[in-house]
Length: 356
Image (cartoon, rainbow, N blue to C red; front, side, top):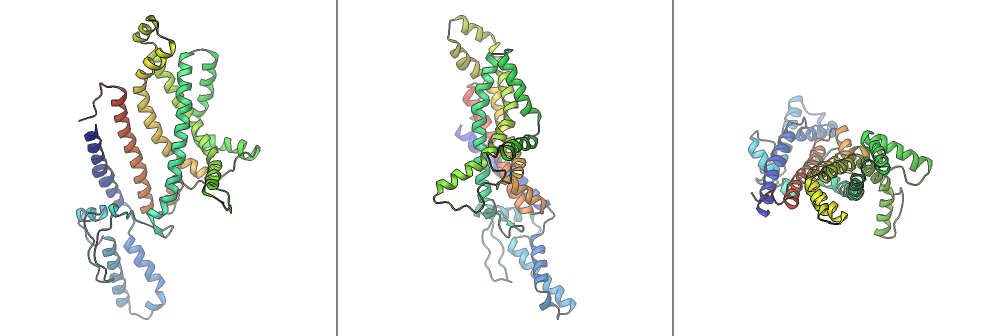
């Protein structure tokens, strides 16, 4: 299995993640060298005013070339640019600045520069990434803790009043768009009852005595977004678990287990649930990835400082390098989810081999 995991990670990193993202990166209409050279030209407008048109053109050409060398885009050789972007080939010496060329790519922590925030992308995404991961993992754990027992309970009590009631309630979360659910919850919990704050991840102007106080305040602010994300997930996952369990409980081996006199709990959890896991695992991984995608809407609705809100801001302001870095984050989440799904198959069903 270890060999299989290493091979899958190699495929993910070398081909899908790096090559595809690099192609997208070079297809964007962003020219950082030209933008910076143009900004310098505007800033030095008064100093350049006394120069002739030819001198100004030469000055701009040299400034543009200086930035091209700094960013490794002075060559049209895409293989060389790719190796520089990854961090496997050094940049050229810059005669304009006197700086010696060195490795400065992804492997060295260079994910680009954000023109919107005027700093490196790594520094921009550090805090939002922590918030997004925490919110999504917390809501995932909470949703699974509710949907799996609820789905099993509904399957065992199929057709009864409790099952019908749960199906009606979960249908709301399944059919309504997540932003509609968010607005409904905001109206009741924030406007009408005033239980939770309406936006943000911390109290404005708050001074915390300890890190624990800051953490508690953050939990208080993200409670409602987590509840919304969990409620929106209940419908689909509960119905899927219920359907898989109903199919498993109708199999011949379940009747055989009951005929042998096994306790009902053993029949449900040791026999039916284990065989129902295979289709459920696929749904859980796909649903986990969709939660991260759905956080774009939730973070913007509740003004949370997360990757989703940052992604939307980057798109709105044409901050391409920031957007690509965030897209790389979501791609990594999707690829890790796919890997975990394959590994889970092998753990649940011994017939599935994951060592090749």
